[in-house]
Image 1 (cartoon, rainbow, N blue to C red):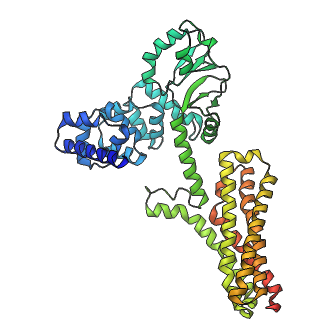
Image 2: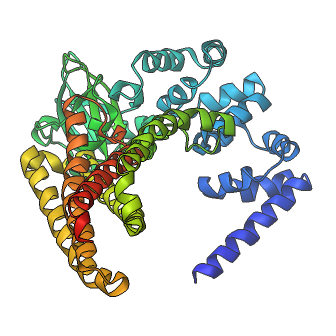
Image 3: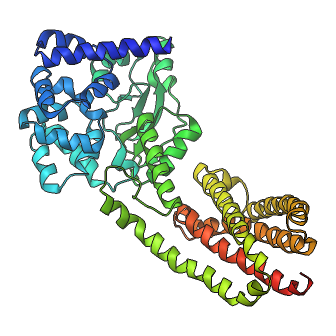
Length: 453
């Protein structure tokens, strides 16, 4: 069934493209405008410049607005360069003001002002207000199109007014109740409005237990609150509780995607270096600091091996287990790092104290150490014929895994306490430090018992 539906979509898209290439305007418009926005985008991104120009001539700016809004930033910038001012004005007079603000924030100020001058003056004022808020705050991502009502309004009046206000609103799932000073005093769901008696006043059916966020709140904290309460939209207020905008669930999904990408970049020590839209030079420049730092840190590993050179020369077999010690230490620390960073990102770490978390990771390391030690005590004597060597390697790994998990869990907690992003305790950093720790423990134990080998 899925394959059949995919075949139908592909056949439909081919037909749409053929009408575009043949300049069959009426047939193209009929088919293209009947598509879901996502399918329209799938067709649009396949077009070369000539066909895109042909599409612009067949579809108005108002009709193209939905497609433009769904494109990624790089494609949006490309499209803007291909359009005239009237077409651009039609697009930006149609899409939501928060989406416009997000796009203009990525442009040069002169280019952004040029576009703002083509937009309806009232919308331009709203957009300038959104641009005035710091990026990655509730004020910077909120939408200004919301439905507000008064507590004294009757249900029948509000329903009648929705027919006029709803088309321009970001969402009508929630209606926000304001007093005479535009302060937020209540919230009403569309469901409660519809089932209420027509003669009832809003103040009798609204909820006064309103969860809101302030304009300066960080966007990641906003996302956590919306996730906690399962809201479809969240009101944004000023310090004086004046309703100034709303944040919808689609904004939160974008926030969570951005934050996950940012944390992933930090985690692998390549902040901003995973973006496929940047050049090789830019990617290398963003990744270089951690790579260079870790290269110097890695010299410590060589220093430890050099320091215990005598032990290695005496028992060359010790070198066989160096990769095992280093890999196990790094992997254990990175696992603990991932667990702690994820717990902080989801807020679950707040339910437990720091010492409980460290104790839990230390216990995990001990159990892992015991399991690996038992395996080595069985395998090493069989393969290499030395029980003493097995004891050295097993003891080294037991100690290393125990402390590697503590280090991997403790570092992001400390960084978080310093009000920094715990994701900067990157995997490569934890791995390198634990490699050094593991080798030091291994060679110290080996040097102590080398006479028994």
